[in-house]
Image (tube, rainbow, N blue to C red; front, top):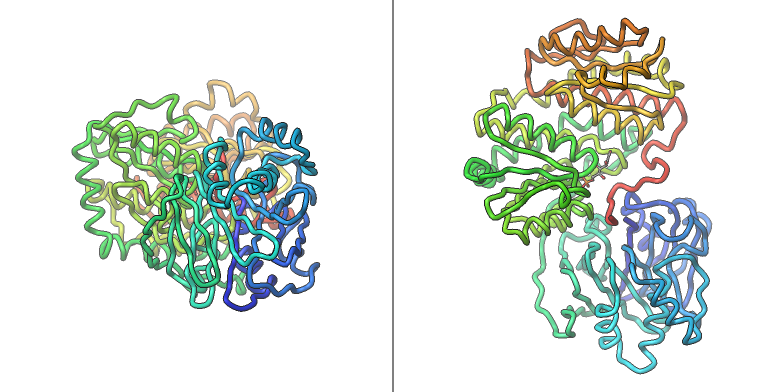
Length: 579
Ligand code: F6R
């Protein structure tokens, strides 16, 4: 997590209007605190969000500066612990995304050499380390020694007071150089500069770069200069970038789903069709098909398993952080890794691990050229467009659309074409009644959501949305499992949302069982009595998407009623690049 941005320019830039504006585009990576440093030696930092920080500082002009938005790992959310950090002489400034695992040992060593530390962070050792090394080495030698000595993950930017130059080093945390007309950007991801340029060079692990106003050079860990390719990405969907017609990004992104799912369908029928066919072949011909993902992407993968199993293809999924503990992988395995950001550390780590064991790698990502995409044999893009709100909404839907499409190619029966219009219908027909339900449920402590088969993954996804955005404890579970323990928690009035796809009588009975114990049962069904309108026929795979859309809206309106920070919920970040 954490976002970093550096800009180096031929002339001057405005710290507020250029640097921090770019950094703001990465705020979804963390928003505990913010700070910047420039080559003149100016440093400002504070806790809280970037817009508040921008209002509080003067508009510095500089040709070279670095900045950071933090998601705290080591050390509390305080001004002192915020980045940038500096050395005792305050002439080396650094920003860091990642975790330095052996920082305690290095800190002791540096303290014994007279360095004074003022923060509780692991990151602070970086500026002191370079200060020490530069006493006897050139910067290139110092960076080589840094890569050798440091255990952990890092994307780091370093500037020295009075020198118009940025040094950038990467291992296991994302870092990219953006090539714009008059400036270079160094950033955690392309979104920091995608409004200004679509040309980028991606750092691989243990590479570093030296960037001057008019040139850049890349090196490997031994200091050999590298020739790197420039990528041109297509990504921005400009009409979707403005939030002005909506109070929050989350509701804007929920409403975008008919358009974004249509865009994906067009691309799966069109320019991505060949890739789809190749992936379908791999699925058919692999001995073992396993998925891995985290959070909402994991729930999408559970649906992938369900769809493939329905057509006789054996598939499994496992949460990425536990993948190496519970999954067998070999050269006959096909791994399908799903990640909106393509940067989730657990997913990237599990994928690299599977790759080392000879597995073929397919990925589904939203962010083009992300790490996951670059380590995959084939990568499908889900074309949801930038998702700014921390909650996955349109990206979850598009992940499921892509999985449905793949399954459809392999024989799963579904009319893919009607997905966008069915989503549109569900939003239009139900939004008002969902607002009323939100008014009824907003002060509840617990909500249970039950599902079976097609509706089990949606029950988990809905529960996750309710927890992270509306701060209500929610459990999504298998309807059949309820009576094996959890039913003891059902009291008169406890809300239970029952997701009943088609004519699932077992699911209907599970709803009756909790109703008999006084639960306030809310039914989301398409072929039985329902509290919401869902216009799909029996056991249509689209039910999974549509029930989640209702859950997204319910979450949004509950959070709004409670006055919560919907797009930036507490303690979270959108891109989880630490383990
Ligand atoms: C939930 C949410 C997270 C992400 C998870 C994985 O709304 O956004 O649970 O789904 O952190 O992120 P990606 O898909 O980027 O790997």
